[in-house]
Every structure is written in structure tokens, then in C-alpha cells.
Image 1 (cartoon, rainbow, N blue to C red):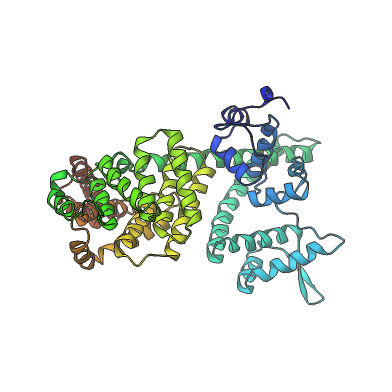
Image 2: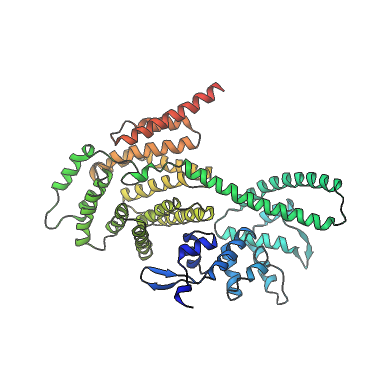
Length: 497
């Protein structure tokens, strides 16, 4: 094909009705062909990618197919995208003459505990047609549900959570069907027709279309409200929180600088000074100290991570994309370096600000949690690094979409750090004498915010008040006062009611 018929990613995204990030993800997952690299910074796509992307999105949204199933169907059909239309709404589990699917069904049954299977049968969520040769037989639809349950569990979903979700949905569907029957039956009796079956099918299709559109609309509203309610004030400050005024830690910083050996400075001291200046919001000076480490020890992992992280404040969007790729490469090359994974996890949360696609938001949140889970598998012995990871996790959990579970875990994580306050104060007095002046006000403020979101306003006021006693830049106190006033107002309103 001639180069002038190819399209840029922005044009492809507009025609296909998706975001450029979605297109990149589809390429990464092998769902659509890779672009043609015409120049170093230019990638163009074949125009038929529009129909391919639309087929994938339709399979996702209209036929409830997960991407893992879509990829399997495409691979089995040599990437004939029409196969997505022909396939069932999920993995085809109908038995075939070769007996392959029968074996798959038997394998699926082995994945589910007998107690869970018994609940599915009791609730009539799966249809058991009776034993044959000592084995239970299930309808094709039931086999699909059983296998999908098994796959979801293998990907981390708990059986109890899956059953609770089905139970909640069953209640909602029951109410919907009752209303449907009352309204449809009343209409049909008043408007008798000889084409009743056709009318019934039209009614069902209309209802399904309405439910899917309503689901999409409300999901977008929930995500939009979640993003609106988040406190992103920390993004405007130096580094994941509120910065200290220089005079708050000048003495400690100057004492550390005096200890530096001019010709062969200690790498640990240089990194610590970079942390100190970042706490004040002086990122340029922090980078200057990191640059010295890079000359002496270019492979120092802490320096490499912080160098990438701090430089993001001075680059545009394209530069930030390149820096993030550098962070991903660093993590891939050093998978056991927990701090790198934590910083990469935070970056995924920043990416959520750039998209309104609910599926993309949940994917990014999932990637973030994945990085933190991997970080905790290799938690460092160094108390400072361990605390940073735990603090970052606490912050991330309170800002994730997904409801009360993440918020409760965030509060527990904050409380775990606070329970170590005496040990941390002793540690930082010896190693980073300024750091507690940054850590505790941020910790008190954000834990107060987490308590507030959880409706625990008395505890929220207590945390906010403690944070307000520290010497930090003025915006911090504005947020503290706003937090106290909000929780106090809600408490007072509750008393009056």
C-alpha cells in the first residue's frame, strides 16, 4: 500500500471512536497489526484497522467478550475479524465430535470447588440436567458460566466475591424482569397482534440495547464523578505531596552538604540531598545532585529511578512518554527492585488523568496494583524505602476507583505506618534528619482524607488537626482547614438530624 493512504494514530482513533491509548494497547496485545514505522517518530496505520478496532470494541461491549477471548478467537481464525461476529458471546463450549470440548468442560469443573458449584446449582445459576455415567451434565450456557468462573478465579477473583456479585445482579435482574413483564404484558393485551413472536423479539432486543447503553452511560458517570472528587493538589507540588518551606530544613541540609567530600563524595549522601531538595520543591537542585551520582555510579538504581521521576516536571507530553518508557525498561531489567515498581505504579495512576474511557481507567488501575503487588514480593530491608513504598501504596489505594474495599485497605496501610512512628523517628534522626518534617504532615493529611471519604469524620478531624501543626507551604493549611470544616459540618448535620 502507498504511504499516502496510511493514517496517523490520531486519525485512526477519531475514525474508530477510541483513544490513541486504546489503539496502542490493542497493538501491544496483538489484537491489531503493528503500525508502519515511516520515520523515527512517525508511525502510520493501515486504514482497515478502523473496521478491526470496531469489531473488537463491539465484541467487548455488545457481546461481553473479554480481550483474552477475543485474541483466542482471532488466533484460531487467522485474524479473520468476521469470526468475532460468528462466535458466541463468550468462549464456545459446545461439545464437538472430537471430544476436545468435553475435556475442556471436565477441566472447568475441576477448577471450581464443590461447595461453590453446589451454591450455583442451588441458586439455579447453572442448570444441571442429571448424572450420566456418574458425572453431572450441564447445559451449554451453564458450561460457559462455569468455565468463565474458573478463568476469573485463576486471574485472582475470589469465589466469594463472584458469588456476591451474581447475587446482587440477580436481585436487580429480577426487579427489571418484573417491570418488563408488567409493562409489556399490559401493552400486548391492549394491542393484540398476530405477529406476537416478532413483537416479543423486538421488545427483547430493544431492552438489551437500552441496558447496554444505560450501563455504558452510568459507568462513564461513575468514573467521571470519581475523577472529579479526587484531590489532585499533590500533582502541583514537588513530589507526591506538600512541599516544605526551605527554612524548615535548611540547617539539616547545610549540615549534610558540609559532610560531602569534594572529589569523591558519598553516593548515599548525594541521593539523600536530592531527596531533601525535592521535599522543598527545588527539583532543579535535586537533579544537580543526582547528575553527580550518575557520573560516579551510572548504574545506581535509586539514582536512575529518581532521575527519571524528577525530570518529568520539565518535559512536555512526548518527553513524559519517553521517560515513562525508560522507567518501564528499568523495571523490566531489574524486576526485583521494588522502589522502581512503586514509582511505575504511581505513573499509571497519573495516566488515568489523561483518559475518560472507563475500561482504560480500570486497566491502568489494574496495572498500578500489579506493580505494587510485585514490589511487595521484594520489599526492601531499608526502612526508608520500605516506608516510601507503603506510603505510596496508601495514597494509591485511596484514589483508586472500585469502592470501599480499596479505601479500607488504604486506611489500614496508613495506620501501619503511624504505628511505627517512634521507630521511624529514631531511624530518620540518624539517616535523613529532615524527612519526618515532610512525611508526617503528608501522612496525617492524606490519612485524614481517607477517613473522611470513609465517613469516619471524628478520626478525620483528628488526623487533619495533627497535620496542621507542621510547618509546610501555605496550600497545605488551606486543605487542612477545608478538611476539618467539611468533616465538622457533616458531623453537625448528623447530630441535628
